[in-house]
Structure formats: structure tokens, C-alpha cells
Image 1 (cartoon, rainbow, N blue to C red):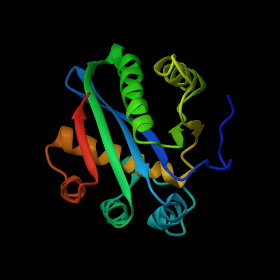
Image 2 (cartoon, rainbow, N blue to C red):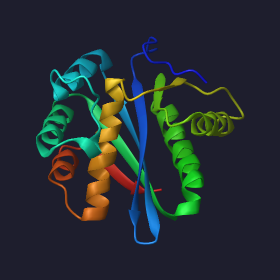
Image 3 (cartoon, helix red, strand yellow):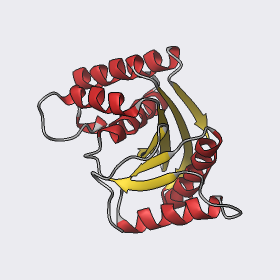
Image 4 (tube, rainbow, N blue to C red):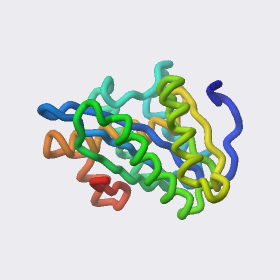
Length: 193
């Protein structure tokens, strides 16, 4: 399957999805984040500014505290709403967790009227499983939004990456200044899926 990097984004209401998994004891906290973005062209430009002149994309695990604070500030200033679904699973159940959480997000995004869903590409096998999940979720009809997979070079995906990282820190480390800020602003909700 070919990535859609550089292809046009269809519609006005865009959502992005990314995932994270962190070890917690003998299990894994599997986290899938969907962020709905309003006025995405403006948001894309603002997000690019988080990394300045650097060429490499934003990646929460590799960023320092200042870049994470800049990202949280941009998320507070633009029109974004993020929903984080998570599940604590054994290592062997991560594929099932991703499928179930992606299906739950897809249904919610359809209900919200999203016109285009961008999913961060993992590998070809994962992308194919994701495609089957979307098609199964809407088996009685047509998937009600355009969707594709893109690499981390798409700045809109940095939003979901940042929210995954912030939620993961909150869930596993117990506290996160960025999480507290975003939750107080009504930007992020975290639910055990």
C-alpha cells in the first residue's frame, strides 16, 4: 500500500490517529488517540512552528520539555479536540486492542462528521489490518469519510503523537503538566476503551 504523503486532504473537518504502547509491569498500556482538527490548514502551519527550522518531524519520545511545552501551547491556541482511548493488555493482545480502539474511534469520528481521516502508517501489515477494521466497522454501508495513511512527515500527525505521549505520561507516570493544561482547557479526554 502506498502512503499518501503530499496528497490533498479532502474536506474541512480532519481527524488524525496515532498509537502508543508502553510497558507497564507484565502488560502494555495500548493507547490510540484521535484528534479532530478544525481549520486544518492554519493548524498545520502552527504545528510546523513547534520544531522551528529543524528538518526532522516532531516525535514526543525524542523531544525535550521545551518542545513539548510549545506543542501544548499551540494545542491550547488552535481548534483541536483529542480523544484518547486506552486499554491495558498483555503483549500478545496489542493487535486486538488496536483493532478495537480504532473501530471505536472510527465510529465516533463518523458521528462527528469528519470528512478525512489520516492514520500514521506503521508497516504494511498494520496498515492492511487497519483498512480491514474500517471496512468491517462500516460493513452495512460505505466508510463515511476519506481515509489514508501517511508518514510522520505530515505535521497534522504530530498532534496525535503529542497527545499519545502526554496521555501515556499521565496514565503511567501519574502526573503531567501538559496533560493538566490540556484537560483544563477541554482539549483532551481519556477513556479506558
